[in-house]
Image (cartoon, rainbow, N blue to C red):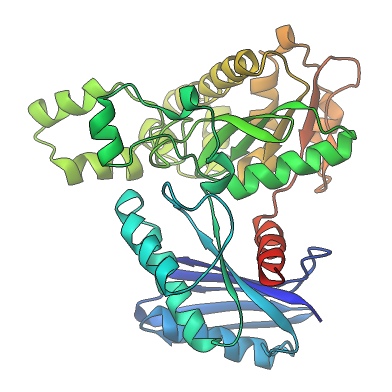
Length: 394
């Protein structure tokens, strides 16, 4: 066996999978929720076996112990004979981490140092790393960074037009996020279409959403920036916003930095506009004639179309558009609404293919247009497993 244990630690959760890096098959997977409390909850699957129960997880170390126990009960014990490496998802790599990296104490310290750029994510990821390194001291641990795929963006795309000395001092640039997904999906598209020289746009649409322009396998533009807040309209995040609005609200609505942070990250997006966090609920409300939901839907689609048009210009042409992640993979309504405005690019949607419930990677264009349109399920765990295995055997 040559599995990789993939860990994604959140502030109050621990997701994990035991993945074969060659095939992507997950022999076990699970989610531990409400980490930091004595009322945690475990959901674990291993083949046909399922294990769901309440657990005490006052910290991430306890969650790792619960994971080990669940693996043992499920018949997939985590031993040196069955696991070759542990791969960790880390949201922000800052300026120094531009590729998957073998973790040592120095790497831990650097992940901690750049947590100022991702205070909601990096501390949790670091807690998971430290807990797992203690639990599995004899295994190589590898950090795979969401920002790495975008680390070589052209300077014109990565640079914000603010005072350059201030930007340099505080590491302000476009970093981009969901990079592991964008890299994996764009590689899958190249394989499916049999070309490495594609000009492609990837739309990762979930509760968080981002879009990338990829030219011959290299990312040349992406919508998220210094933080995951910039870009597309999302579930509860605003996406692009006139920065003057923040100054205005600080004056007229007495909102301080924390209040503005809460507004833009937790009370905006389709939730702020239409009152729904889930796109399925939003679509149903729209179909029922709810005007607020209809406007939220239209704003969401408008932003998608605007970005696709802009990225086609950045690429100087377009060969493929791909939808991925929860909304991108499962909402034919969103796909159709966006694509019907992109006929000028040579996009021709096959409505029957778009409405199909087929869950695999597939084309949904009619084959007569200039641009291939695809739905490709993302698999960040497999991508992390592959990277971890490669680093572990160097």
